[in-house]
Length: 263
Image 1 (cartoon, rainbow, N blue to C red):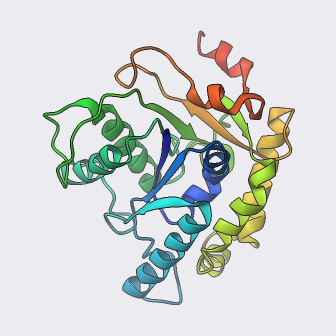
Image 2 (spheres, rainbow, N blue to C red; image 1 turned 90 degrees about the vertical axis):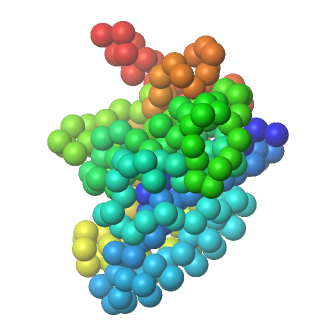
């Protein structure tokens, strides 16, 4: 059975960026796997760090349950995620446990370092899935099936230097948007934090607006998630696009983006 593994930085990042695509794949019989690398301990002005981490772990587990996904625990606290061998070995072990057909992760350039570090770790861990001599923590056997990696849209749909980022393809999430919203609402501790720290007057509305904007950019869907597909070299024997193959009419390639890849 094919599987999808989401590797993101913080509790709620998956719900903002990737849950709709995961739900569409679940409808097609795929196994779902869910990993936030950071504990989320920094996401409160009301609770101390350990209390916040405990609360956010419970919320993330509830969200994963709503999505029907296998849950993997975080490996570090917020703003402490680095591209380092110890963390890489932990992420690589999860990749080998999940044996994903598809890995979903952050954009390579985003507004905060945790997102970009999570992206780098996900890319390298997926790259090494078939290397028997690559150590993982805990030890896990290599597997040799193709893996395809997709990058989500950055927060705000812009990179850290304010440049607008376009999706390479859109996934129609209209029919699963309500469940995606329910999963995001499980992270109830974050509404106050984001209101205070980032001026998000409505936590859920912010996700809705991004989803609607990507749907508008698609020119076809009401709600959408946007993706950019990673180069296949080292991940699969040839260039493949499994999301396009399985999602059919719910997947729309951005032809302007594709032409731009050729300069």
